Image 1 (tube, rainbow, N blue to C red):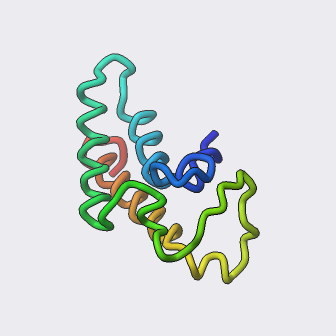
Image 2 (cartoon, rainbow, N blue to C red; image 1 turned 60 degrees about the vertical axis):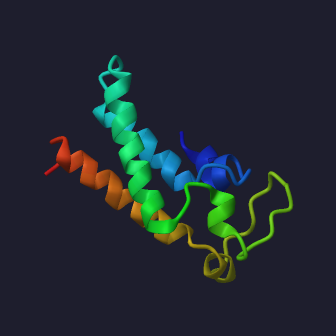
Length: 110
């Protein structure tokens, strides 16, 4: 369901896929489907936490100076060298930790 989040929304270098995933999980687990103000406030706080830690929510900013984007929709081959150039695993861990923080805060997990 979330494969399209990769590369900043289908490799467009827009919102970081880890941030999109964080919003997806928080929305799915905390929202009652009616109170947009509540879920928007939680996601805004989570995004602020992420941005305060790494400086941006934008994939292109987070990868700047590390890789060049050719505009292609084809993903690069996943090699050891691929992962050496990208902060993505660390960003996913950060987003996961922030998500966990809010799920604990609102009693979804212990």
